[in-house]
Length: 439
Image (cartoon, rainbow, N blue to C red; front, side):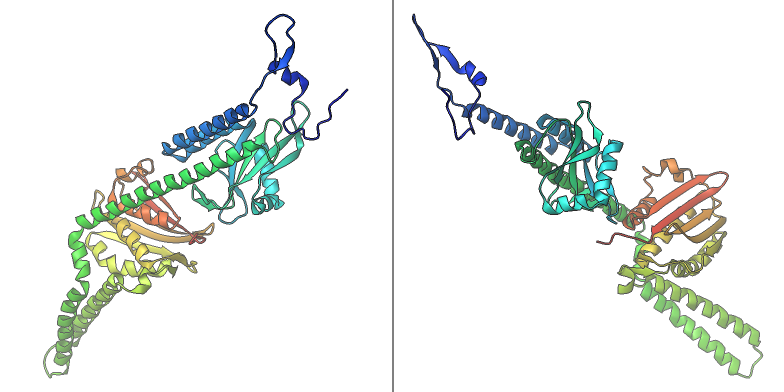
């Protein structure tokens, strides 16, 4: 005799039901089934999973860095599912390669995932938005089975890691044992993934806020220390007007003397006129430099050489007074850089302040521009040596001028290199990339 069950959803095999058998008390007692609520075991599993996720959420809420968040996430996932390794991948700005979030990455996973990326398979998985298991046809495990990878799209969340921001990321897990795409463990991993993406976004915003506050304090300190120069800058137009009016009187008077029948030498009058023109030229450069117009505050393609020439003409007299010999070597046909003219003026002003704050008040300065490796470089070479400008001390340097330069170059996605020694003097290199992420 056999029993045929049509619904075997909760049916258990005979050997599994043995623990549920017990013997009746008394002589001649027979075996009987005891009543058992099978749902209690399932409830225990759910409670255990929820407790694990809640503990994970509480742990990452205390994390201050992305590395701590990733480490906790990896430990939690390994408690949920039997995996060998995991990593999160996002495309770079150009979308032609993948960037791994975790530093530890096996060569096999990197090769396999990039092959999927090249073949557009990852993009299809991300577009569909559902977890997908893909078998690696080349690598076999010890037991003869093939290695499988579980791919879980990040969804609509945007992940910003090390300057790479993308909502087309994907979580990749190398499975150590069998798993199906409908396993309940995957839902737990997706829930933990949503938590870390939110926490990463929060941590990044905190770091960005701190950087902005530091930058604001730097400019405030600079402005407070240079308040006299700032006041003069604000009064530039009025001061220039006061200078131009007497110059006009001098010019008119000298020309009047030329027309008079007197003993005044014509060469003397020409000399006076030349000096007046020179003063007017300097004033015009000052007005152009200090002018507050919309064009200078807009991001636009800028000719770096022209901006350097304008700055050079303005500061040439001041450098000569300090016995600095300044020479420019500007490469022709330099491609334009996406920037603001005011930003370049600010860089040049602060670099000049650093150089002139050195030990001596005399020396030589060479300003060069070069184009190489799709980057425009501005190089400053000076004979002065300054201990605080050594490259090894640059990261934690507290000099306000240097911090302003570093902030401006960071905003331009560029690089700053400074080195100083007794043999070669000081070298300052500003490197501007032609391709920028303006999104």
